[in-house]
Length: 473
View 1: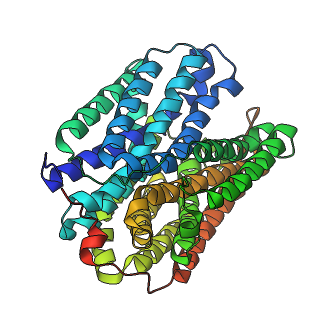
View 2: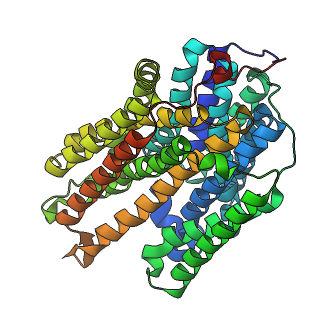
């Protein structure tokens, strides 16, 4: 392994890269309502600016993980960084929909940085640092989204909307330079053939499924487009599964993924992702609702972002706590603790939403649970898969979290539109709809706890050297 920087510096670079990649998921929220006008298109078409990034990010994670296993993690991290530079630059120069969508899809592809970075952590850090490093890297997915909203709102309020993407371009360029100069190139490539057909099949199936879920509320759940995409996505994924089982060099070894620890951890990832996203969707709506409703808190977009920002800080602060808990209690129990804390935050919200500070406290509780639980999932995965499949396995786990967040967004939107009240010619969610969202979010989190409890206590053990993934020079 060619040393370029200290292990701690490498961890900082990887976490920065994950943070910048995750920022792209929420950076357009402050201008979402204006995108149609800004890009000279309809509101329906402009909504693809958000959807395209979420879908391409989900598709990229398992594919980037497999490429990292085959060709080396540092190389794939470098490519992801450069893709983010390119995508952000295209968005910064865009004034119409087509180039904006192209840039946003590239920004989504850069999300592959996060699972690859997590998998690399155990190869470049000493044992005493590995658990905390993986926890910090895992938390960047949530932290980036949490701080992206207030940062973007502030930029939009004082500068041009293009500045959002110029800032993203500059940050991505810094990450690319840091990866090139400070992240060591570990000789971890196992070689083999990249499963192009499997990658295309997975991509097509996920696009159909996730677009159908994301657009279901807008198009109608019974519409031909929604049903067609969902059915097509499921059929393609089933065919993909059959193909992968017969392949000698699959994109994802489904037999390994079907092992009980891996399967249950991935199912828990869906539930925890669902729980994390629910408050990110619902809390801003409640904070910005007019006080004339009797429950709204009349906060501006910037104020809303500032009330939610502490959650991102708490999430990062609790990531080293997760590392300590994993070392003391094991990843399984740590995941259960994280899910329980998330659920407790939603229970808090069911009863206390009368002031912005109460929502901030509840958000911090949920964020603490995410910070604790997110790191436990890749740890459980890495304890149960061969070293040669570490990248793809973590990529699949990250994909499952993305599936959970996508389903959560759709479910929360459906609940919020199911019970409304009229105010000033507009239909707004009722107070009962918000309460229902918090209850459903709690159920998702506690389901994750149950699934984590079902993970076998005695997962396949490895030697310390194997677990840390040390590679030969």
